[in-house]
Length: 80
Length: 425
Image (cartoon, rainbow over all chains, first blue to last red; front, side, top):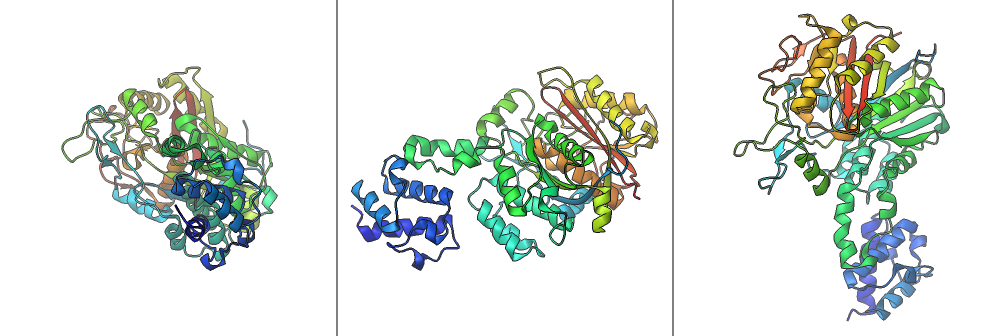
């Protein structure tokens, strides 16, 4: 089972894949993807890529309205 | 349709990318040299299409980097908008930027809401759709939400308008293999109506899915066979033509009212002096000599020219036996059997059939030959279907081309011909 830091690392890598202008060091639990400069389409793709890599099949709708990256990581871990 | 005085439509910028060239200048060289982009498809068996004229490996960031002169703002905006987009969108962005810069629109242009955008082509996402099915099967959540945008043909319109800040009229138009010319005609009409002062017309790349390619092959349109490592070729107007070769390509034209070009003091490459667009009243893939004759005649009439004035025809010429014979018959009827008749060649012999983009790619080929003073070779032509027509030979020839027709005919009886003139003033 992936630990929280491992899931954060996967999210970070996907954020940088989708928007390479983002500095990986800026991807921290307390910031939101929107703050980093991801638009709604980018955010949806980061979630889809991460679900695919974790092998988690959860409806994407569950990931809407998440305030920050830490909450995203915690929600993803619940489904592992 | 008689042109309204003062609303003559001219071409002030070109962009192109095909299997044989990455921009207009390399396209000119490729045409002069008669370079052919056809290659054998890997891993194909009997009953499958054997050849294609595909783009060399394409990398958006590298392609933008090679466009020197591009402002860092435009480069960044292009990357941000298209980095995760399908190949067709990425190629459209780079090709449109070439046309945009060559027309001097990177430096100055009319207000954003006086610039229009017409993207030619329909059903552009077959290959992208195919690539997403494995994700759908593996897990519904794995389908990226952005696909909802990229699965639309109009994503081209959205992305290009964002990158270039175009806020005038915009749409996609379709006409099967005649789409490119339908786009040029639509753009010309927006300008003639004064809906906009500048109109970017982009012929979109067709990245065929396995399914679409196979259906075209089973219909007998795509050439099969070939010999050992030698792929089958697209040999327009040859008695032995065995079918077409699908090509990947994208073309872009900046169309503009002559008034706007004069105001901006940019050079005019050619004028869109006339065009014809007509249906055959036929849903099939059958070419129609009457329809082809009618659209070429209409283009001449609109330009106020007679057949004797035409120096060159960039034929539809796909390499399919029936299509080429029909077009040859229509050309013979219009121009007669004259030794000094117009030069005729078909760019598809080199680029393959660029499908939706073909009309725009071939308009660029026509402009390049008019401004370069030559006609490119019919590289695979050995036994012409009609000895009385003046087909270009196996080598490029110097030629003064003042007036040229560029033909495109699509499935479902969509006939088009565009008349380009070098006349200035």
